[in-house]
Length: 584
Image (cartoon, rainbow, N blue to C red; front, side, top):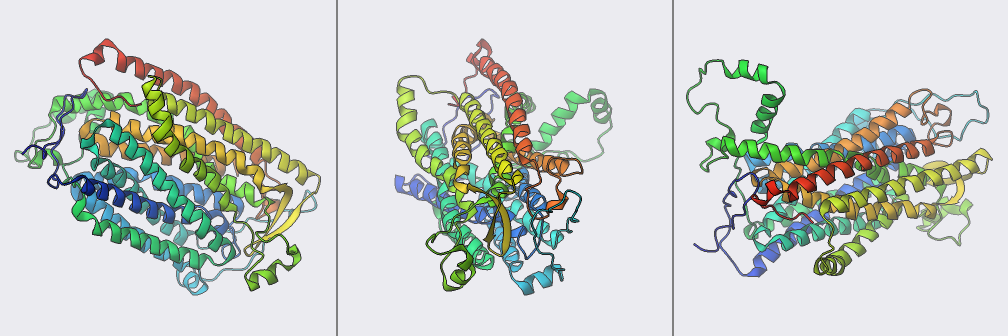
């Protein structure tokens, strides 16, 4: 029937687009309903995710756990990194066994269970059940003399919290990798422009969820109760699960057709270790015919031929260097939810009700007023930039540049994003230098945030706004075009896997940042300050920021060379016989 068959687009690999198990052609309101449901689920899931990530450093650094600033920052980076690094696992399960729809539904169930476990650690009886008793060790100011040292306490409840965070990361990564491509499937037969617009609005919905999370959840967690905040997170995930199931009849669904990961690994081994591969392939086959077929070869639909596997492998080899050079950008990007937060806790945070004296803040909190502005609200600077500029870019800037034939390619936008990320971390380093100048002159302000006392420099936290704005602008030019590039340039049969690789490399950047923090926290490192347990006033975090800026600058130069070569090859004579989609 006409209208049931998806259009076939020629690609470099020469493969045919797999048929979809899909609903009959309905009026346009059905695809709009499907896209709206996907965006709403993403908004709620991101609200839950940012509700965990936004104040995780403060939660672990609180009197309930007594983790040091370095330990809490490292745990936040591990959580953020794992939530991206595990993305290929969910994508692989969806491709081989579950299909994207079922994988998303099961991931939301796991999300619901893990967020409930996290909420259980937010009250005393729950902590005692999962973690045992803790010896109290209050936070204290920096040592007055150079020789006194405090021993860093062992992180309380670390095994339980890391297990819960990894379960949350697995669920979030599976939802992220599958929901992105699942949503793109809903508009794939509407043309390339619809694809670009979907990714713009998908990213916009992510940041709507972030605004809701940071405005409401961050305030509740910091000033009222982490238990109430985490309970709302459980509610958000439960609502997302219900909406996704309710909208199922309107979705385009794709059955599992197998994963090409095995064939790609086989081709990589064949190219890297030809002698070992020849010895392995020379062994006599004892299995019955068909026993060694790949999952997609055993399925009713015909899988890619060996020639198509080789062509797909060549495309993958060309795309991966571009994506790998984005890893240092992700190292910079994830500072926004780790070391930027830690820096903000040591800047002066004003009260929401400044008319009341600071020494009455405890009494005022009991009366329901005198709350501190949540430090996580600084993330709103990043989010507001995205909420404003994404619609402007989608409706005004991109169409104007397209009419003038000046629309930059996705690769050129990503280079611009790296530049803004570089400037953000440089600005953070300069601010940290200024903060340490005040600390060096013993100009500190004692401020109570939740149950914790921090010794901050008399600099307003609003000085952090530029670095958050710059990282938000960088996200528009690096992350959104990166998603579009990964989806549009991948072979049809590897689009899900390529989205997983994109998010996985994002996680690699976060974990490398965490490893760098751990390395610099060793004795003699810039972030090693045991005499200042619970604070960072004796650390040199400014040098850490400048080191990140240097790594980003060096890699950006490498990226420019690799991306330029990729575009020259794609536009060369060899590519004219194999047209591809424009990635701009």
